Image (cartoon, rainbow, N blue to C red; front, top):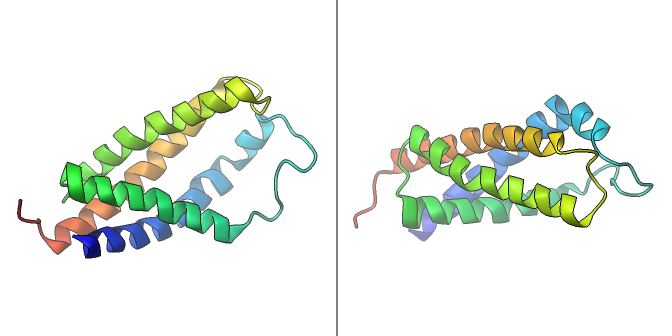
Length: 141
C-alpha cells in the first residue's frame, strides 16, 4: 500500500505542477492578476519553484492516501470525481478565508474562476492517478 501511495504522490505532484502552470500560470494568469489587489512585494518574481513543488508533493500525498485507503480509486473517471469532490470545496474554502482576512481579491468572481480552474486541474490529476492505480490492480480488502 505504501508503494502505491508514494507512486501516486510523485506522479500526482509532477502532473499537478505542469497542469497548475498551464491552468493558473498561462490560461488564467491575466484574469487572476486583474482581479487581485496589488501590493508591492506581494508576489515573488520568480516564484520559489522548490516550495511550489513541495506543496504539490504534500497535496498529492493527501490525495493518494484518500484514493488508496478510503475511496478505492482504480479508474480515470472515479479519480476525476473523487479529486473534484475533495479539491473544489477546499479551493472555495481557502478563497473565502482569504476574502475574510485580507484585501486580496477585488470581488467574488475570482472565487468562482479559481474553483473552475481547480476543477480542471483536479479532474486531470485525479484522473491520471486513478488510471495509474487501475493499471497497478485493485488491492485486496
